[in-house]
Amino acid sequence: MDLLDTLTAKGLRRETPTREEALAVLATTDDELLDVVAAAGRVRRQWFGRRVKLNYLVNLKSGLCPEDCSYCSQRLGSTAGILKYTWLKPEQAAEAAAAGLAGGAKRVCLVASGRGPTDRDIERVADTIAAIKDANEAVEVCACLGLLSGNQAERLKAAGADAYNHNLNTSEATYGDITSTHTYADRVDTVNKAHGAGLSACSGLIAGMGESDEDLVDVVFALRELDSDSVPVNFLIPFEGTPLAKEWNLTPQRCLRILAMVRFVCPDVEVRIAGGREVHLRSMQPLGLHIANSIFLGDYLTSEGQAGQADLDMIADAGFEVEGAGQVTLPAHRSEVAAGGCGTGGGCGSAGGCGTGADTGCGGHGESASAGGCGPCGSHEPAAAVAEAAAEGTEAAEAELPEEVRSELVKVRRRGAGTELAPNA
Ligand code: SF4
Image (cartoon, protein in one colour):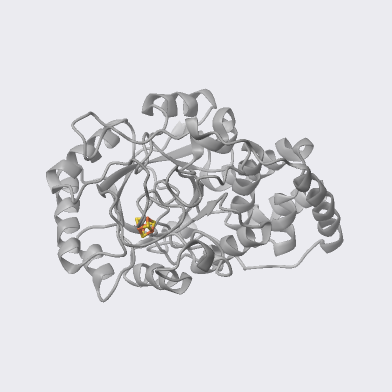
């Protein structure tokens, strides 16, 4: 297929596809799906081999948020029966982190609900980072605390944080439909602050909130522009008790197409399958590993993932290997750029989320920001072939029926941080 040959070649050269090519990936048919996965897999193996990076979430503060992100179980007015607790003590957080590290995680993501941290909160998180790094110097720590102000990013960097997550979540055009208490520009600003402080940027999206293909392409191109080092791709977990509880409109095939599109647009950055992996990819999860090079181990912020051992078994069974602490995640051309970017020229860089929203690792507020230099952003190629594929695909996409409600797949987290029970790792 000309489209996939073109996208593979561009990905291997770190060249940005056109918007039309990105849209055409989302419009491919089920008959073409394995070819799409194979093409994205070639790009993934070029930059990340067969390694899978494991990340581990520690929810430092759960629920009780004054913001109104529609996708988030911790939002203002949420009636989801999630755990609610205030700041974990540093030693409690370090204990939770240790479980994830023992399970094979390389990065610990420290997440707190809320609009953004106070200066006192930054001190708490600094103490927590110290407690984690005292026990394990090699661990990467990513903070995800919402909107940053003043010199908070610099203070986190000085405290030993390696990265900051803050997701863009969706396109600028639709951002106001999902949240009214802060803006898309606020999120971009925080990613840029993190980046400017020398923190590696982690910023991604949430798919499945009723957005169009154009919205998805817009947010991924925006992430590239921001030059995030890691791009978490969340699939909405429609929590009962939130405004998006009935948005069950993803299929495993759709999720794979979205992951492939992100890989083609951001070929040499860490693409992470984040929240919703088990709920939406289900038995197709191993195919996702051929595209993404990173996942969360164990549980998410407010929902439970599959058993940590099942994650490890899946990686081994699919012929991949867990990335070790001594291995550098990003390709050399990116890791040399202090805090990285989406690896390509323009940079993906999105502003994750507090990982809460989609209940991924970091969907809510946002995660990190980096400044990589990916390849040239937005080239313009095979327009005719692409337009044809897009047209074909549109029909196929329209033929897809919305999935039935599968709320039995959403299991509220009742173990780990904030409970007396052992974490899943
Ligand atoms: S995503 Fe973050 S800021 Fe938004 S409601 Fe959830 S916890 Fe609050």
